[in-house]
Length: 485
Ligand code: ADP
Image 1 (cartoon, rainbow, N blue to C red):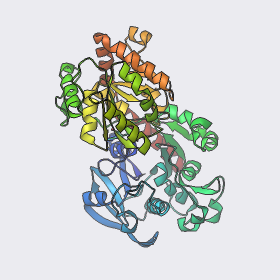
Image 2 (image 1 turned 180 degrees about the vertical axis):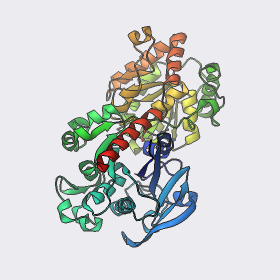
Image 3 (image 1 turned 180 degrees about the horizontal axis):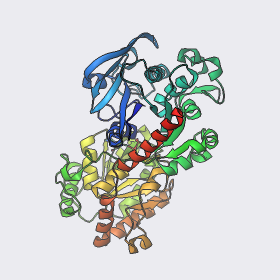
Image 4 (image 1 turned 120 degrees about the vertical axis):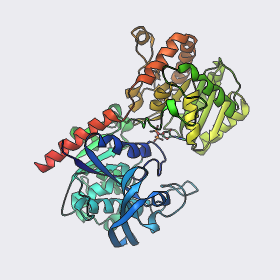
């Protein structure tokens, strides 16, 4: 098996910088691909957190001028990855989130910030950086997509290009006057190029011009071809359906490992499940919930947004409490939802606990302690928290949509009778369906043996990166062979 070289381009990579699942995937995929004989170099913006972590750095390319000022491409190691870092302080040296300022609004120069990332990645792909001549450029989400457009319209070396969509809702749409700044020819501003409803669409450009498109679950790959989930791009995705595929995400099972998770009060595995309830007690204590052993303890670790169905959860709270459930929620997001949840916690002390913020140790404690991990999304490209839940013996209760539908098997009566079922699955977008699923969970948990079987089947489900990495490797090899031929 010959070694293939991939340049991954992304705006985040765990553990260096992460705002969601994208960071997890970009951080974990290289190690899994290495087992498939694929060498990944990951190109990232030079945020302070990335530059601070960078070791053995050398300058491999320099710009006198890149979107407003000089910049360098640095090669080295960071966060366990081989990285190329675009050191451009005028674009990336600022505190806070990679995408938004402290007040929650997009950085006003996001078009330039991620045009620069795409331009540097395209230059590296053409071979400007000694030691890096990738066979494949793998662009993650809109922030990386301009690399594909620049390679398409530019001259010189042209590796195979793969555009991976982690969430079609984030598209990178900017004014058409930007075209000259992007270094694209006038002909690129066309329906089969970067033009998007009169503007410039970064993700649209990547989807229109990539050799292959992947998204993060087979069901989402099909859903985005229809108006309901297509976010304005369904026509293009129908047109290109022959090159679109869905590859499920895995999780990093070294980080998400209940056998030796330093954040848990008690570690456990499927042979020592009796140790798990100690985490339930610790979580109830930590979140100031009543030490009630009978209540169905429901956990949520999520962005608090409409996409994630968090308004449906708010609406359902009275019904959940009527079923005797408790809620342990960790997340942050839309102000109105945060406010409603905080108010509910004040109204129901000991039964509803809400922690607004981002807290990785607590995310582990929720997974290790709750009975049910709820993911009531309206759409969900893949979803990672339900995979963590499987591994931690928290029974996922999810909406039947996108990657949630692909990863959780509903433990209905027939499934249970034939020894199947790893969670509870309900119709998406319906508070009534969510409440009915909670009622089913309460009933199922009363049957301790059946509940334990559901937990154990979840814990035995393969949620590693091994299988997805084989799919990516096969796709990369086929594409590389096509381009070589
Ligand atoms: P998203 O759409 O936000 O990317 P995913 O389920 O794909 O959703 O990934 C979310 C990732 O972020 C998971 O690893 C989850 O544990 C983590 N996460 C989400 N919210 C929080 C939070 N408030 N604190 C800690 N981790 C969080």
